Image (spheres, rainbow, N blue to C red):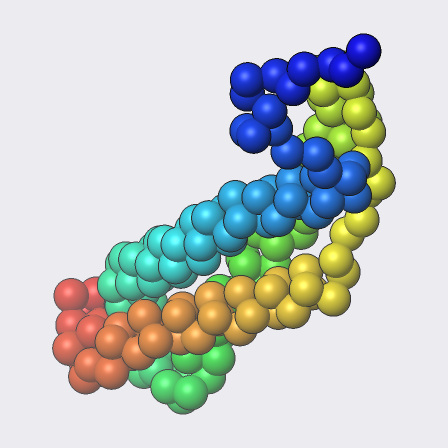
Length: 165
């Protein structure tokens, strides 16, 4: 006795589990490409926020910078001070970001995944990439603070402190 082929037999596809896994990982990687794009947009928005913050801060401190220049502090020293401030604030943000990101990843990998999806995964931190991006953010934020501060220290020293006389 011969079993009849089902009417939907042409639509069936038989695959190996390794092929299905490869296809799933490819789809997963494509979905994360959007995440990486959003990450880059967030970095640009963050740098714009740093620029706006330091621009406002340096404009508010124009008299302070004028007084420092009046007592002999050179323009380059004030710019170095602003770049250092930007770097230190960014370093604080990077450290907090690493601590919070590490904490969230532990919760997702070891609590949420097993409870919600009934599967686990290995935890791997790409330290090389993380350090490279952190360094790039640190340099970018310091340069952004430096560029934002150039306007505040470029004016006339006497005019900057005139209201305090």
